[in-house]
Image 1 (spheres, rainbow, N blue to C red):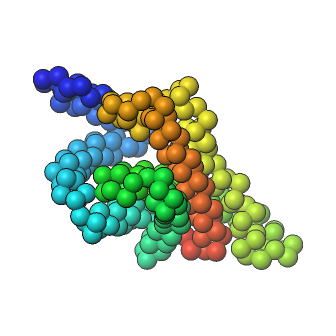
Image 2: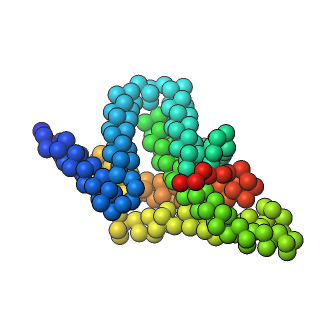
Image 3: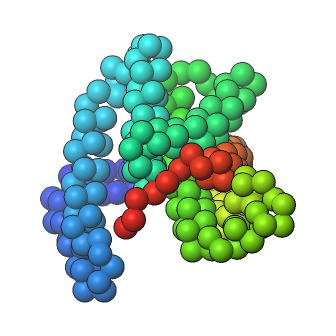
Length: 250
């Protein structure tokens, strides 16, 4: 069977997926990257989770309460995922602060101004994009900040000796490195249309929208994502400087 979508739904598709998973795991194992098993489990989880979402999404988008509950579920999973990377124990939930700080105001601006529809079928994917971006930004910024504070402990102590407060000393050391977490989003925005054609753009073209409409939607998504991630990184750095994060050794 053929499909008019981006991916052709042929009998070979399951074989292709298995081969791609095997290739990713093999490369990670052969290169001693330490994530061979993680590649397999991540792909299996993606298949199961997308299957579950596909089964319930039609029901979810029909109810405002269900839409809100689904977004809260996504937020909870994003918080837990980022928290495992950058914090220990109960501090894990501090990861939810930068994710919410980045995603909620941006989503609110888009909804209040009418830039996006309030329909569930629109709100859920936009919220997912923002939460996913803030998850990545929080994880990268948190790990970089904590690594810097551990590896450059002597410099932090030197700043304290010069009269800096503990927060100011930590910020001076960890902020430049943590700010690099914004680079992927910056590069994606700078090169859109030249290197990549992101999912929102391609999806709208396949759905029958004009190239101009698709371009506008993609621009809104990229700018919103950049604003959300910048905010998430700022809050993450602040939390690290205040000692709210403490990552376990890896």
